Image (cartoon, rainbow, N blue to C red; front, side):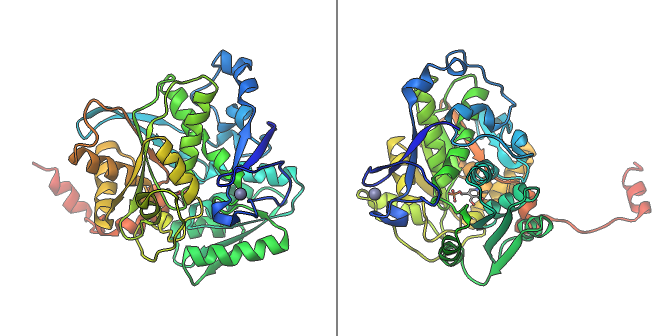
Length: 404
Ligand SMILES: Cc1ncc(COP(=O)(O)O)c(C=O)c1O
Ligand SMILES: [Zn+2]
C-alpha cells in the first residue's frame, strides 16, 4: 500500500491515517472532507512512471503506485481498464467517450468499491455499509458478495429495478427506505458509525475518490499521454468529478502530462445543488435544496463532496451546467442511435451537456473533448420505457414484409 497522509480540504490540517478516521472533526463532515496526499517527488522517480510502462486495457490496479490499497478481491483485475472510444459527434472529430458501464457491476462506482473493500479487509473489518442513490450500493453489494464481510445497504425505496435487482441477487442486507437519498445517507451514517462498520458512503471516506481517480489516469494513457481540452461528467455528491480533477492533477504532478483539462460538471436542472454553491462563488458554503430528476443517480440535494468539487472545478477553470429531464432523455436516445452506447440517465448527461455547450458556442470544433459515461442504461430501462415498442408480428406478417 502506498504511503500517504490525509489533509482537511478546508483548514489544511494533516492527519496520519487510522481506522475510523473519516473527516476533520474541527471542520465537520462536509467542510472537513479529507484529501489523500502521497510523496509525489519520490513517485516521480519510480521506473513505472519514468518508463511509462502502462497497459491500455489493464485494471485500475496497474496504478498501485498512486493507490492507498493493494488488490485482494477476485474482481479487482476486471475493475477499470474500461474502453475509451472515439466518435465523430456533433460536428467534432474524435470525441473521446470513456464508457464505464463495462465495469463488473456496470458503473463507475466499482472503482471506489474495490478500494473500499480492500481497505476494509486490511483493517480487519467484518461488516461494511453504504448509503447510495443506487450504483454505489449495487457495486459494493456485488463486489463484496464473495468476501466473508457482511454488507448493509441503505437506499431510497424508489431506486430503479435494475439496481434493486443487483442488490437482491448479491445477498446483501438491503434497507430500502421511504425517503430521499439525502435522508437515507444521514440516517445510515449515524447508525453505521455507531456500530463501527466500515463506511462506503460518498465523500466521507476519502479513499473512495482514490479509486475513482483512476478513470482520469486511463483517459490519459489510452490517448497516448495527451489530455483533452474538456472533460464532461455527471454530478450528484461531487466525488466522481473531484476524482477526475485529482487524477489529472496527479499525473501532471508526477510529470506524465503538462496540462489539466477544463472540467465541466453536468447536473439536473431539477436539483442543481453543487452548481448553486459554485455559482454563488467563494467562500463555498454547502447548502441543501429540494427537487427531483429522472436521473436518479444525481438526484442529490445535500451534496457531500461539494467543497472539493467546487475547489477542483475552479482550479481546472471549469464550471457547472444543467440539463432538463427532457434533454436527458433525448440524450439517451440520441447517443444510442449515433454510437450504440446505452447509458443510464446520470451517465448520459455529458453528451447532453456537450450538445448544449456546442449550441452556445462555448465548445467549438477545434476543441478536444472527453465524455465520461458513468453507468449502463440496462440499470434503468424504465427511463426509456416510452421508446420500447412492444408490438409483435405474426410469422406471416414478417414474411409478407420482405416479399417485394
Ligand atoms: C451513473 C452515475 N453517474 C454519476 C454519478 C455522480 O457521482 P457523484 O455523486 O460522485 O457526483 C453517480 C453517483 O451515484 C452515478 O451513479
Ligand atoms: Zn479541518
